[in-house]
Length: 405
Image (cartoon, rainbow, N blue to C red; front, side):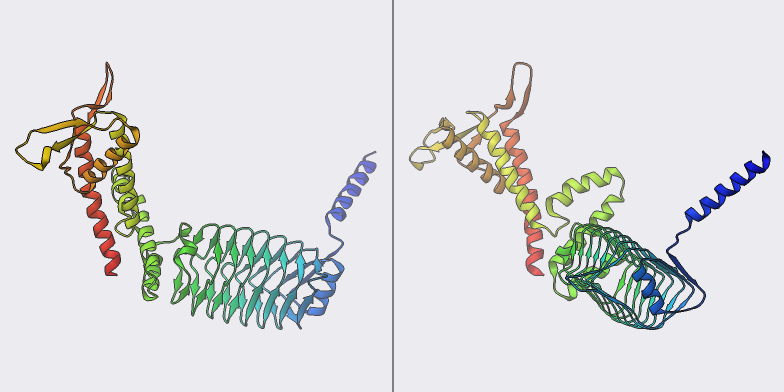
């Protein structure tokens, strides 16, 4: 009986081991591998695993736009050296690609390729030209800690998920022209050696440029406005670049971003007053449009206040324009349209000048009931005059700064 139990247990273990194994897996370790052998394994649909090998020959698989080549199984490996070119055209990778610490000694190109799963090129060296053109990354694309020694291009690529170029080094020119990042992308710690081109690049998510080094970067402020994430040093570099290119809107945008980041780090009793009285009113002196909008809103708001009651303001009439004649005070006109016009005239004049010679606010209350009274119109006009002088000074200062530059 005991022998039968042991025999059944051994049979189950053997069955589980064989069931776990992938009969279509092809594994190479610490050897020279002809590229044709890898291509044959891919054609058979084998799972390809290459560790510490030297791949000899050109690794090239091409389809056509009408009949794309389907690669079903994963391709993974670490520490490999590709002696010759690697090229894939009009292919669909249905499983992930994961290469850690690989060295690509010659041309590497992916054109018109769809990556359905994750793509991982971490710690890789691309010694020659590298192209990812018209590719679509449906899941994460991670080119982290890699080195691109010559020209590299990610032009017209579409990144549907997170993309990461964390701590990459681009020793040659790199182009992201017409690329589209639908989610966040990080260039944190990246060294853009010669030139980084983001011509017509679209960013729908956050763009992390923290600790990024660059001498020349071709980008517009409107591409990253509201999406930028970076440190102070990178902010100063961007400001200097925009200033050198005479893109003053970019300089003001980065300056506003930098001041806002500084404000967030302050205690709440500094942070909130600065937000309401400096950032929203004039944008730290770089957005006169903010001041103009606030001025227009205040004038219209006080116009509504003065229109709420018939006797909020009164007109002073000098008969025959003779100063010794008695002055007659008359209430604001009864017609709603005329009353609204008079209220707007009084509000705008009070805001801009501070004194209205032919109108006079009354001692009536804005809100008046049997138990509650709130703000006389005389006090209300004084508040509007103070706000007017403050906002007009801010508007003149910010607008003058714009014209001088």
